[in-house]
Length: 197
Length: 360
Image 1 (tube, one colour):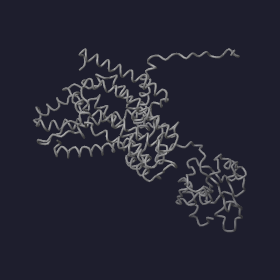
Image 2 (cartoon, chains in turn brown, yellow):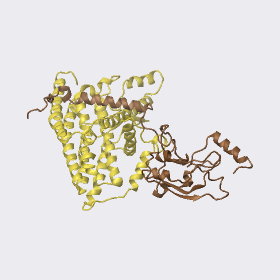
Image 3 (cartoon, one colour):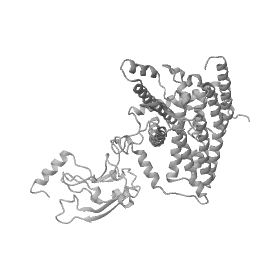
Image 4 (tube, chains in turn purple, cyan):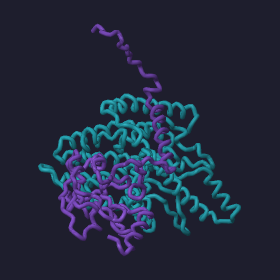
């Protein structure tokens, strides 16, 4: 067939040399390559890690498990405006809003708060749009935590019990994030005062 | 007439060889994983026990608790017989391998060997040839096309490569003039000289034998009977539970026996360099009795032989994780048009060298 572009490269199948036909030189070459890798791995330079004990470092801008933040005196910041749910492309967030009652001012920062707030971690794509949408700086995606694997699907629907960050400096929950020492000290100081609300 | 102490000793040795074969096969599964992992820059199994050393136990528990599956339309008796045959034949061939020189207790001299027969090499070949029946019967009884294809491949492959293997062996037999593995080993034990090992006289024959050993044990690059990518698993597609385990085990026992046979035939068996100098040094300079010095040499030789065997087993695994599988027509061409003519040429060459008095 006539070549249209004249750029076709002519290929010839060269007959193999005796060394190539004898297989053995190529085999020894291959064996030496794998042996190099053997010694590299044996001297502790494996490319894999022993996962639960060792973990690869997260990127500082990694978007992991969500947290609902409290303000500096321990009140929930979320006001249940629903902007995060609207922004969510995966429709993973649902919430029920409620009105703050008298005497609950030390619990909720705004007059309206989320009675329930649920994120379905199986739907969530961890894009971070909820974080951008939030006007109250309440929802954040943590850079150092992932949603761990579980056996049941309904265990992936995270409610407020697992999303809101723990209140007191020593309420160390496995699920929430811990306050920094400065935050914890400030919070403890505030709570010790008699007019703490 | 075999005397009673010898008979008792032989029973003990056979039991020990049986146990050691199984132990080595067990830890071959672990070694294979670790070596595979290292060759691919990975970590390998390290969860069960220190360094993952209990991994074979975990595997055995897993295999034993799996469902025993019988495919519809399978011939049940033959289906069970397949893995049994594979395992029995694999274990039988190690009986004649001389694992060490003599051990002396007072007036009793014992061979570190199961049975000393003057046709040892024929015994190994006969049993290895029977081994293919395990694969053939298992593949046929599975009532599965892939299994049958794998079994047919195994049959034709083993028959083809046994020819070249036998021809390579003939050159060794021309030098040694005996079929007894113990005799062949002792002939390679010239004082202080490692170059009396047969590998020096038979380099070409050794390469042919090695390639054929890979084919006979169904190891990569000649693992066409299993051939996961084309035949799903070949002859053991339909096997589950410990019947599957027996097939895998038989393969590793075969690797062990093939390594032992190669060590004995070409690498001096239980001989190691300067063994007689070492014995004489113990006798003359240290004032040991000749008997205990000889016993020490025998034990060291035993360890040396196992070192050679482990080196070969490592080589088997090293090659497995380096080379891809041959195509079926390439396999047949290699066997019939390259290895067999080469082996015949090797026989002629050896004959010429013997006639010329260069090797004896």
